[in-house]
Amino acid sequence: MSPPSAAAVTFAALCAMEGVAWASHKYVMHGFGWGWHRDHHEAHDGFVEKNDLYALVGAALSIGMFALGSPLVMGRAAWQPGTWIGLGVLLYGVIYTLIHDGLVHQRWFRWVPRRGYAKRLVQAHKLHHATIGKEGGVSFGFVIAREPARLAAELARQRQAGTARLRDSA
Image 1 (cartoon, rainbow, N blue to C red):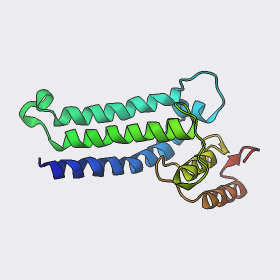
Image 2 (cartoon, rainbow, N blue to C red):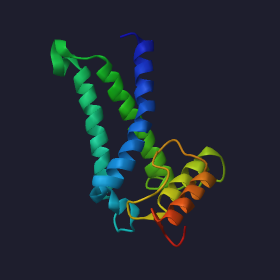
Image 3 (cartoon, rainbow, N blue to C red):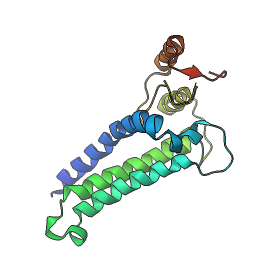
């Protein structure tokens, strides 16, 4: 595979992961996988959350794609794009860790953005955490964030319709 093709596959996989993350957050983490995700939405002691198990799922996806693309693992059956898809998944995981765990939840560093896109990401995720329980909610993506005013309006509609319970601070 040529370097431009490998770069294109890697970039496409990285971009596609935001859609995968959005869908898995909305339908798995806030669905049948709530047992792992619940502690992320509730106050708890300790640095590690059950929710961190989802990082292992992402890592397994990346490792699986690397293996699928590796002649050392698959021999002649290796599918070369698998390596570059695995790299895109890995890069998304690094970006997710820096933005979600680092910037938004401040697990790795302390910085409160005052303006720009970083502030928008933090506000959108805080609105995501404004709900109690797994029902309702907004902003299920991790890197792409809609306008906070629109998200707040959507939360208000959900509360009015009875599809979301909001925290008092919201």
